[in-house]
Length: 251
Image 1 (tube, rainbow, N blue to C red):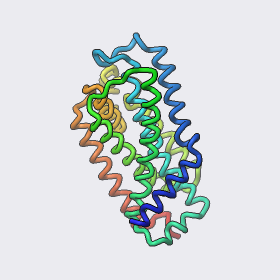
Image 2 (image 1 turned 180 degrees about the vertical axis):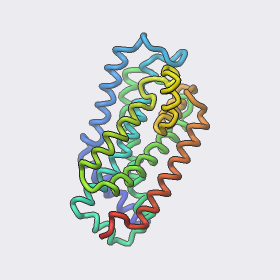
Image 3 (image 1 turned 90 degrees about the horizontal axis):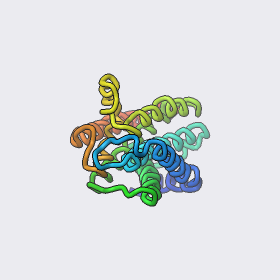
Image 4 (image 1 turned 60 degrees about the vertical axis):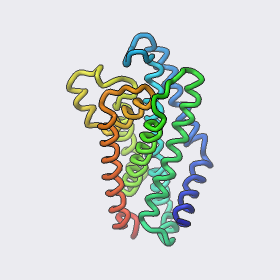
């Protein structure tokens, strides 16, 4: 475990040194979304009975930030190491591809949870958010950050330049996270868009996470949990296969 702990610690130190950018900036951005949308739509939109729009908005914003930062942590670290050439110093160490995977994903989980916890703590000052099941909340936060951590590794291995990495985030991660029910219930959409939304895996992460707060959701909690577990299994398996092959990592 020494290799895993060393690489994990290196990743923690890396994003901690620029904590204002990696942790504080996402918290501030999410709170701005909360203030603006709640000011405009509070009292005009009701999603769940007995739940104000501001309360409804908080879990979605938290999970959206967890998703985006879980992806950003592993992808930005690995693409920087590839382009600067210092990835070789990690590859020559006696660390297996599985340990490599565990360390990067674990660091992504930590960053995602730190950002999510920060948003929740500040949001509680502005709005009283109920908690239906802490176990469900933690489970979906862990699953989402792990899934996006694995996806970040895949994206960084595929990308050869920063602009390719930025395109992956801007044209895939951002749209899927924004169009996953963060600001609305899919039941408020026309039937075509409701059906299309159910093909978005990020929707199930947010919907399951929101269930942990309110005890209600757009789809059954078991469905969301099953899809998240399947997504984690498939992405983790694919990531391990790519790492084992050395694709775009070894010259």
